[in-house]
Length: 289
Length: 320
Image 1 (tube, each protein chain N blue to C red):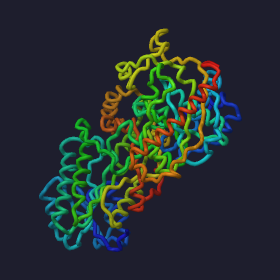
Image 2 (image 1 turned 45 degrees about the vertical axis):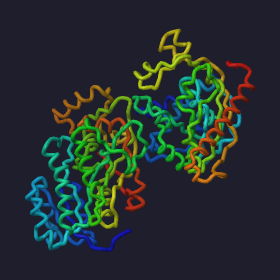
Image 3 (image 1 turned 180 degrees about the vertical axis):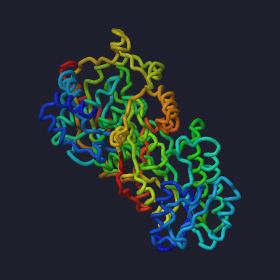
Image 4 (image 1 turned 60 degrees about the vertical axis):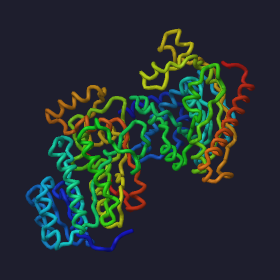
């Protein structure tokens, strides 16, 4: 029943071309319309129909370098994370689904706490997002999926506005898996998300009540408290995809046993992301246009 | 590695639905020499067509040490050279809680495995365990392998704790050089007259789902379950194996396929509603035992069973 309602919704919202594009996206259907994580195409199309409004009209996303993303095979997109709430992830996923030919569904690795939250965890699973566990990562790579990671983690998205565009130190898990599973890494920079919700204070105790690591207090909080706190400013998004980094061609699988080298590679990816951020900041004409 | 040796087997809980199906499968298996079936009931009629040269039934209460002793010292056990024990005598109804259930499920399992080791005659002990022994958490990976954490939570319902204890009792004997201990952790076995938490849930008059959750669930056809046991008898293996079925989907899909009415209910209301349901006989499902199962996925990683046992599920679950 729910599926019928979803179908009616996205049929009314998406153009025939968009529906055709989304139909090209392959999922590892186990026979009932769901993959092992719970991804379902009807939900995916519904999410696309909702996010499309924000992608096209609100954040007016522009991107460069989409051709760097392989159209098939395993790949890891490593991006800076910013803006208080993970809208940047949704915009990257939307951008790849919209502009890459043929389109791919990028599976974002989301924070663990989301899984315990009613509706939130369910929604994430249904639209293709996956809880951040190394095994989940491995299953996705074995299935030749495209994965989006934010190696700066919650430290990165929780940066205060004064530290904008200074990505946190990258974790190393994605490097290890890239070497083990021979997956290229695409450095991704998002410019514009920092200004959507300038986090001026992290309220840990309030966040814990909602099962979240913290509550990001933004200037919008002073307009209407928690109700308006998460209303993002319509900053313009610019996404840059760098050239694939194929460390596995130069470093053996044994490199994962060398923590210093792995951290050096993670730092290298971070420096590539920072270069793309600098390029984006230089190229953009303003925060809102 | 498949063994060509003929095995003589003892099946405990042979009158359970699975036990009975296993006995029939093995009866026609030429690699099985003799079957000694054991259960607490009188000999049931459905074994009447079995020849006494291939099958013998014994009434044994596994919670009574004297009866267990008598079983192992019996002429038939010795003369038929029973070398493999398949332990399936387990109270699996969600309503089976209390001292009696603990006696059979935990104390009975311990007594049986100790006795098998004591005889020196038994070279393989196969225990039918369950995916419910794993610690179910929201942030678990999509598939649990055999090394995943077990549910040692002191606050876990007795129904769950007994399963973990029995599983651990068997695991503790795995290093024994004279007897191969095999623990098969099955996903939800679903079929007619099968006692399992998921079967009870699917058979409810109205199944109440936890609002905001719809976990991925794997179901096994009973024929696949007994096929896995058959493989474990014949393969030269020991250790823990996850056994999965062919069908994996969100919980609501299976409820719909089974034509079970479903209603979403906020979690705090479940306990009360479930208690009313049980009182009026509208369900056998116990919410306290199955709470996490209705919220979070517990899918098992089948890799080891595929590689070592050569097990792959073959049947889709039948609904309705």
